[in-house]
Amino acid sequence: MTSNSIGKIFNFTTWGESHGKAIGCVVDGVPSNINLTEKDIQPYLDKRKPGQSKFTTQRKEEDKVEILSGTFEGKTTGHPISLIIYNQDQRSKDYGDIKSKFRPGHADYTYWKKYGIRDYRGGGRSSARETAMRVAAGAIARKIIKNKIKNQVVITGALIQIGNHKINYDNWNNNFISKNNFWSPDKEIIKTWENEIQTARKSGSSLGAIIEIRVKGLPAGLGEPIYEKIDSDIAKALMSINAVKGVEMGNGFSSVYETGISNVDEMRIKNKKPLFLSNNNGGVLGGITTGQELITRFVVKPTSSILSPKKTINTKLKETTISTKGRHDPCVGIRAVPVGEAMVATTIADHCLRFL
Image (cartoon, rainbow, N blue to C red; front, side, top):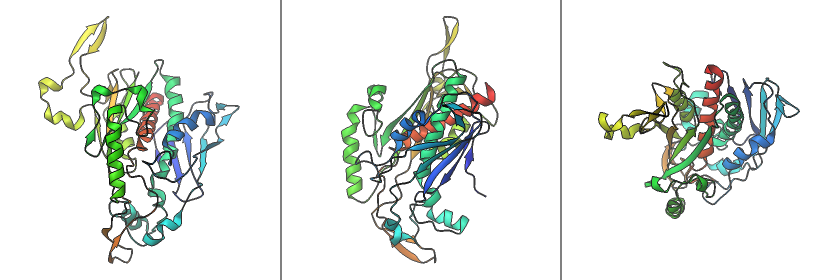
């Protein structure tokens, strides 16, 4: 059996393949009378769509979304919202040379082993093309969050590392994130990243990345221990994104370098309200939000579709080599930024509907 849905009350199911006629999703659990049109969704899709710079895939997709059901006169009806995006720039012929081969590091082999079908057209269902619909669902989720939480909740994603090169946190500027090709908050790192990606592409290789998501405005108390903690649900949502290999909250894996003295978030009282003196735990304690900024990060591995020849096997279980041609992201982590934002938004929206 496949698992194409996520969420409990706010939930969505995606469908479609990379080189099929269309991709789409059905979003359920959305309350009625929320203002919603394609114009509310499209800006987020525009952040993710391919072919916007020389540092991403050159596949050209407009990713124009259509709402097929679930709204009437610009408002949600309380019934399932069906969304569709028609694919426009498929080039299945680019994969003709590898249709019986498995790309090392890609899901080609495991999908073939599980389902008995080798959909070589860009990986079929395992392609990151599916993530466009996650972004669409995330746009609707933001509407629910705004409707359920009185404070203004702001979800901000940024690329903080490509390969070995990290941003300088002292240079973090939210206003700069949307003004560059990398969703970087640090202006000083851009030239280095440009050079690194160009070098990787010319050598027939690719690079990994780390994305950070920050959420401001969440109230204390969101999350349901023991097995539906807000951070565990966010981790599941982010790990479901293609090519993601790790997730952390707050200091995360860096906590091992701290001590009990340095890693705790001390507390005081200010204006008769709790005040945390640090945020090493990323705004979550015991799986429940503290009211601080929620901070999570995820790592995206280097793109597996590379031009450099690599050893592999084929569907006849014979040894061979492979070189993947076509249009691929030299760093898939760049376009993962809006996808990460969306998955955090859908998780928060689901928790809002379940527990607020």
